[in-house]
Length: 155
Length: 167
Image 1 (spheres, chains in turn green, cyan):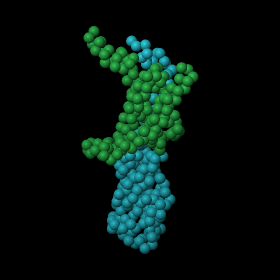
Image 2: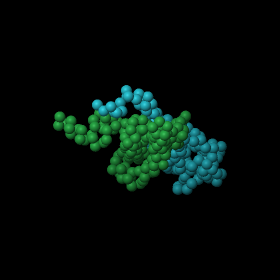
Image 3: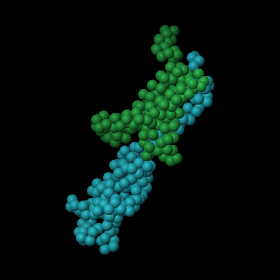
């Protein structure tokens, strides 16, 4: 009983997530949205590497669609915002990791030098800029569009 | 159990279509990421000269370069009928013009080898010198081969490789 009480205290910090299973589902959705968003923003930034028949427009649209899913997956406006914020953070991490991975890999013989290179030479800044110029305009815009349209017509 | 947990049975269409979008994202990423790593690490391609011929009374020096691509994505070497960014150097001096240098294209598969030939047009005044230096293994090629990974341009460094005939 005392364990259940302790759990309830922890989970209830997030409104509506008063059960570990609900909390786990929320985290899973955040991770899925974030990883998918990070993948797509990375792909979109590397336009020249997108294989046929895909073009950047399709990738942008997919990213917007993915963002829109934050609303129906959450079911509530407040919770969908939580999903949006946390999945955006996860997507940034995924995007940046993918971006700097080859640079770290290159200096596999000297990992510390690789990390120093990544930290000092600026690829992290490039990665962040790339993400910043895509993600809000696709993922977040997709979410906002969905919320506005659904809210206007069906709420 | 919370009624509003996001489990499949409550909203199968939303969850199912979301899974499809996620799958597409993963497929796209899986297609692009090896190409990205290859484009970023193209300098790892190893270039060696394996053969040469002197043709047309010394006017053309045709060198075969073997390329080893250690990456996980193929690299296309661009065919250039002139203006290749490669030069023939002897004793620290460039002996050929980029505008007179041609490269034939090739596809270097992932983790594989391929060959390209470079055709240097040699000015009349340098033909004798170049023949001597090439035959004694003292001529080197420097510059860059132009390649593509999907549609992204990559430069493959050719850094002072010795012109020689392995046969």
